[in-house]
Length: 374
Image (cartoon, rainbow, N blue to C red; front, side):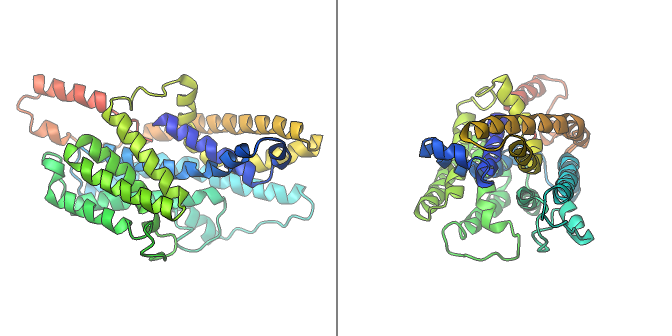
């Protein structure tokens, strides 16, 4: 999963290099498929959504969701996500101000206090404020995914000790899945409100469905039917976003069912890329634009020089993301991890012997099933 996250983030970086016309001369000299691949690097975003659905499902799977649990869960998410995100907001504003001062004819940006506050709270889309950095829109969606998913579990009074966590849980999540089909199937074409999560809800639920199908064999037919409907919708409507989500979900489920989810793609460099992927995603856009502009100002442009600066700029984005991860994101992860979601775990409450073989077996099973919190 870390490997997929890293590849997805790098795909978005390459997409913005393409979309910003930083490589036009180089791509004109290369086979057309290279530009085609870079153009579709933005499909790293649906990969993120599916991974979130899988990992969040795993992180709450053994807990009974109560109002206090939802509060702790959202606080933990906030501590995990906010510091790197807030730094990225400041970085984007700083680069925009600097660019206006050094680039002839570029207007000085004006950021209203309400716009900045809305960004800090992931509400800029809902409140119709212009984006400080275009990549931030996905976090507005993610926060809604997280909250609504755990809220549904709470409303269902889920019980991890019951089959499918209880009939109400299965019913509510099934209804949520049916509702999510309205947008990709084209039955509904408008947002209930600006920045609503509902048109993209199916992407998150594909990840959650892969997890549930892995853990509960009886869910597999429903999961496959859901995925088949979405694959049909994606292909018939030329919706590459949905198609990419379905394929990512199937890949996760296959890897989990075959026991490869904790061992495949375990190369060190790829795991490091996955570890810094959130910081890379948040910070790459202003760095890419500024670095390409500075490089071409120094050397001019040609296909060879564009290739050279692409390599340098990509390295700069990775190095900067690693620094942000080390200095900001890594401490945030550690601090978030100190907030317990459930204590003690629900399974341990029913264990006949606190230190007996049943508990040891449970620990071993948990260790085998461990998936890193993103």
